[in-house]
Length: 423
Ligand code: PSV
Ligand code: MN
Image (cartoon, rainbow, N blue to C red; front, side, top):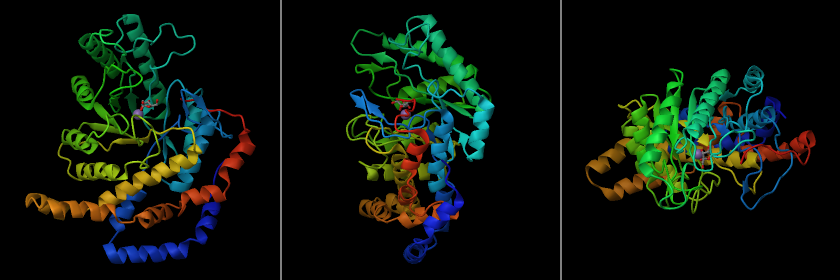
């Protein structure tokens, strides 16, 4: 299914007058909003190819019909999200879940939907059919060189797929670790991982980046080889200039000050990638902003500050939604996540940075808090709607999705029992 411009324009028609009134009112209160609207309208977040089907837990999976059963259909679904939000112009592929059989044809398909390929993701956390060695006891860290070599070769192949598609980065997330004390020698596992990563790094084209993701626990519950940002940072530093740390919001122990980590990494120009999701307990992968919107806003405050004050040349991070669960229609879920991300971003852009600095220099804690909370408490729905409108997107994407009856159209096209590859 493809959504055309006439459908969006027709949908917007009834909402236009009220929207313009809201915009005038908001501008009267906050002054010129042009810069913020422009920043939001230029902002895009990659959609992972594994988030378009029904997510599951280890206890079960509930289908909802019309799931994309191949990569072409996944691209079409992202095309739908992008047509409505104008904020999702890229896909992040997971290999081998989504191997492009004909790279040129897939590239053309993406181009026709005005999409491109963001970071590639390798997978050495599951065994695949016909795979010679098992990853049961790790991959890049494994005690057996044959296993490490196989995992390195897989990552190199993922880079090659990415080159064919025009991607420019590889994200490595390892499940490697241990469940029981004594199972693994921490230092040997770290050194093996570094040596394996060096081989992968040597295969990177000169204009590529390597993102190293960390996670404190799960699927291993005693130790993870890359457990935290410090470990990721050490590895990236040892690899070279093309390697960076990737922050996934769900990959922290409860109450970790993630905004502080973001600030510290950006001070050294080391924040390369960002995975959005939300959680209450662990790596829950819930829709963005559903649990801790104030934390997300504080994180965006650091991201905005880091992008505007950037002596260490931190690249613009590769943004991706990494959420997946088993209740909502994933397309609606992704649209809600995009809106939550942009809401936090727009609110952070509203912060009066000069006044905040002044309050900090004066140690005026009360004013500093007020500046942040005033921005956070501003309703920015209208800013987001205007940003979308200027790109010919929908004023209200979820309502547009429902009024166009997208899910039922997809069910008619693909049937009730189609299933997507992924988690
Ligand atoms: C691991 O929890 C993770 O966040 C990594 O980014 C994976 O690639 C992704 O989820 C999907 O498994
Ligand atoms: Mn992730």
